[in-house]
Length: 104
Ligand SMILES: [Zn+2]
Image (cartoon, rainbow, N blue to C red):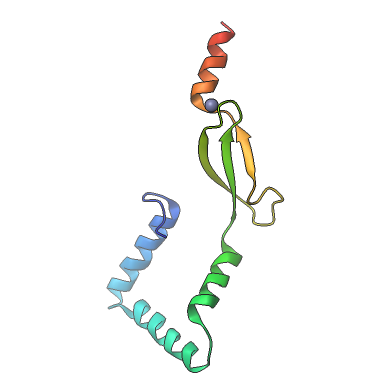
């Protein structure tokens, strides 16, 4: 999956690609060589990479509006956070607007 354009991860990916181009695709070659080496050793590059990534990736909390149930996307959390993978409740702009108007 590609990172969100404009996000920090996107910048990191673009940086990696630029470095790769400047170095004459050395980084891509290293990945290819590592894959080959792993294969010769009977290791699974993709599996190990997935594990590596999972260990480093932060946790994700789903955010929902507690008033109307609107899906408000996700936010990152520490992967050891007890809320990791769970849903957190917040309030969307529309509901906030309604509540604020009510109070007037
Ligand atoms: Zn709402």
